[in-house]
Each structure stands twice: as structure tokens, then as C-alpha cells.
Image (cartoon, rainbow, N blue to C red; front, side, top):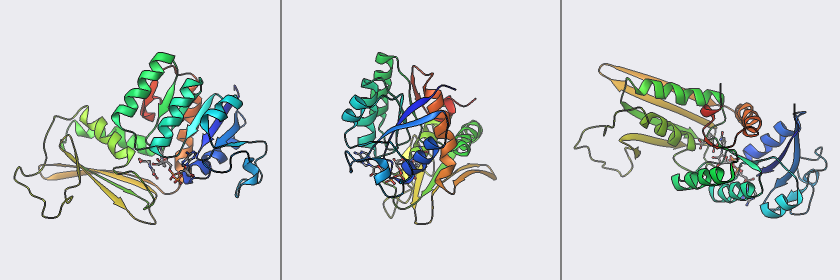
Length: 267
Ligand SMILES: NC(=O)c1ccc[n+]([C@@H]2O[C@H](COP(=O)([O-])OP(=O)(O)OC[C@H]3O[C@@H](n4cnc5c(N)ncnc54)[C@H](O)[C@@H]3O)[C@@H](O)[C@H]2O)c1
Ligand SMILES: O=C(O)C1=N[C@H](C(=O)O)CCC1
């Protein structure tokens, strides 16, 4: 298999550190550099937890990194503002982004799609890399053809910055593509405590739970006359996302378009 040269942004994070392990454990992947907002000019092996990973420079500026390092793919696992800047800069240097960072707006996604079109370059934005989560979204879309009253409950660790989660937004978007438009609940319902009914997306409700001890979980509840259906996925540790990161990196090398969601590249 062809060697793929990779830059990881956010290597010291919960996801980034798993991605460093993934990339350095694959024979056909090469970790060319990392981008971290600290430790510019150092080597990754100087940083706590990475002493055995040699010859990987640390850059604090994505542009300097892309000017100095030859790479095929940028994996971004940072924050939405940083991730957007990184993805745009990577595309400007003909490097294909694989972005797991969540919290992008619709206009961010449209902008990236336009740049990919102009440059004829692949970019994968995956709100959830766990294969089980992708299936949960697809099964929910299937179920939504038969049940159009739906509540999404997403549950994550309490260090998560964005709410609702990228997965919940993507699930609601996929359901909206097939669900007959409906405003749910009683037409006269009133919240006596603001937020009690969660966020509203095309008439569906999304509830975000944040607790220490959780990793990433979501259940989609469907209701109909005399019956309910619940579809649930749980990620218990971040290793659950890594097979999806691997597939995305391999796939983006053959893509010349913008891809939003891993379901679009899984066979
Ligand atoms: N797509 C998925 O399957 C998936 C799974 C888990 C998390 N996520 C998303 O990935 C992102 C990261 O999650 P996390 O739990 O690893 O967060 P984290 O806070 O543990 O890690 C983020 C890292 O980004 C780094 N960072 C911040 N600014 C930076 C900059 N300017 N340059 C380089 N690095 C910078 C921070 O130092 C930190 O190490 C979040 O948006 C989260 O929602 C996605
Ligand atoms: O831990 C996180 O943060 C996660 N974010 C993604 C989301 O927002 O959907 C995927 C699951 C984990």
C-alpha cells in the first residue's frame, strides 16, 4: 500500500493522542509532524507521553508546518475555530483534511465544500468516527420513515465544549432528509423552566447530557401509537473512533470532493 504522510493537529488531546498511536502503529502511515498551540520548535519525543516517537517536529503554526513538511493528509482534532482555519490552510497547500473536530456551522461546511470544488481536492468531515455510531445514524434514518415523532438524547463527558454534539446534529440532518416535517408535542406546550424541551431541529428535540464518567453516547427515541423504538450507541473509550479515522485517511487519498459524514465512504 502507498505510504501516506500525515500531520496531526491537537496531538496532546484525548482524541489526538489516540490518533498519534494509530498513525505510528500503521506501516503505511507516516507521522510527518504535529501541530500544537504550545511547544513550537520541539520534537514530539520531548513531550510527556510521546518519548518513544522520534523524528516528528512540533509546529504551533499550521502555515509554517505546511511550508516545511511534505504531507498528504491533515488529521484535525482540536476546536471548531482552529479546525476550520487548519482545514482551509491545508487545502490551500494541497493537503487533504480529515476532520473529527465538531461544532462547525452550516456556513463553515458550505465554505469548505466550495474550496474543495475549486481545488478538486478531497476533505472528510466526520462528526463521529465510530462505525457503530454511523450505523446508529443510518438505522435512525431508516426508522424515521415509519416513525416521525423523534427525540434525540446525546450524552457526553463534561469536558465537551460543543452542544448539541456533532453526532446529534448529523443524526437530525439525516432524519430530516426523509422525515415528513412535523412540530412535535402539544401545540400549547409551555416550558416552565427554560430549556426543558431541549433544542429544536426541524420540529425534533435534542437533549444534551454532560457528566464525568461518560465518553460518547446517543439514543434516538421514536414514538408512535402504543409503541416506542430506541436506537442507542455507546463509545466506552476513544479507541472506538480509530478504525474510522484509519478508513477516512485511506479514503480521502482517492477523493476529489467534500465528504460530510463517514456513512458516505463506508461500503
Ligand atoms: N469525530 C469523532 O469521532 C470525535 C470523537 C471525539 C471527539 N471529537 C471532537 O474532536 C475534538 C477534540 O476532542 P478532544 O476530546 O480530543 O478534545 P481535547 O480538548 O482533549 O483536545 C483538543 C486539543 O486541541 C489542542 N488545540 C487547541 N488549540 C490548538 C491549536 N491552535 N493548534 C493545535 N492544537 C490546538 C489542545 O491543546 C488539545 O490538546 C472536539 O471537537 C470533539 O468534539 C470527535
Ligand atoms: O468527545 C467528544 O467530544 C465527541 N464528539 C463527537 C460529537 O460531537 O458528536 C463525537 C463523539 C465524541
